[in-house]
Length: 471
Image 1 (cartoon, rainbow, N blue to C red):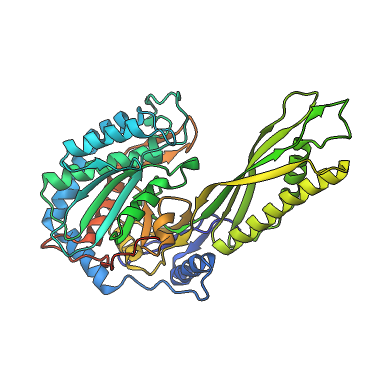
Image 2 (image 1 turned 90 degrees about the horizontal axis):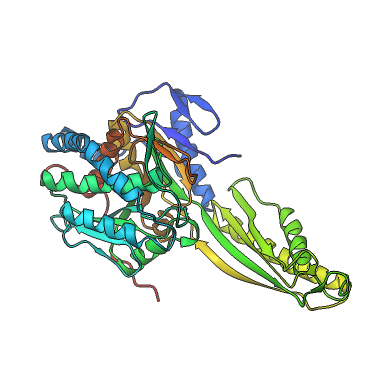
């Protein structure tokens, strides 16, 4: 069974079909599929009962009806469209600044400078390297974190110069996630230019540590330091109308095998090989069984070791990635893999009648998982906003910055910022920005409805009691 992506029509969005990642279903099945979407998310998170996805609640429908009918918001959305060409210059500026994992500082400094120039004078870089700017509301409203990640998967020295051809812009990281950074900057500009006063606070962040072994360190730091965040909307490359509600959890391990080593001929039969022991471990890992639902996966991603072709290897190492849409299967698979590695070392030692081969492991990646119920206000707000722009909503799951708040029980979603994209994590990554301003408008309306606009609409997002600090 593949990753489930379920489409749901909003109250103002007609349509003849719903699309999943594998099938197309006629519109009369909308309510059944919506219920299935909730069931999928809840079951994947280990919940005992499924909750149905009801129509958008009247209060949320009314808030977005008022919002989208307001002349001030109409002018604001026109400004997003008008700012589109200028925002592309921000995109080009930022994407041409390298931002490998753990080396995001130069891009962070450039993003901070742009935030300040566009009106967030008190923006700063925090201790973890996140760029944080707070746009205060009128008071007594919720605080919404709106974020995009600064880092890319590409190492230092990668050619990040933007190339344009066939109506597309090509550059490593241009869609994941630099486009989102430029969208946030555009929002800051138009909100300030049009003096839009929100009820709740907007914490606007360019965060670090989303990719590779960054381990979501930026998000973890934000939620560790800011205990009053009431919800989170992340911006990532997504098809229009897509709302991520499920956070796939992952654990990553580095295993190191150590032995005495020796000459391939002279020491044969006297010492175990670290590489042979690792090979046994890989073979055992390959036989581990995982459930197809909730989707649970593993892979030995990298291997290394040895000294020369004629040496019994004294050392070897491998990295293993384990993922699941639910923590229970993740932990069970982790247990099987750790046991498989230990058993392989025992067998390799037994093969030669010794006990000199050892293995150690280190947890190098820990991404907590979680989910935001599809009938929660933050999700229903996104559904209603999508409907207002003529989109059916597609629910999906993945491993993103939203994993952290989801794991803490804080409402969180990921939505798109506009534009057609492709080639993620490849040197040929591209984005087509034709009419991309429409996606930026859509996600901005989602955000404004959540925090409310003074004199226009009340906040949809609930203000929560501050969390207790972790011990």
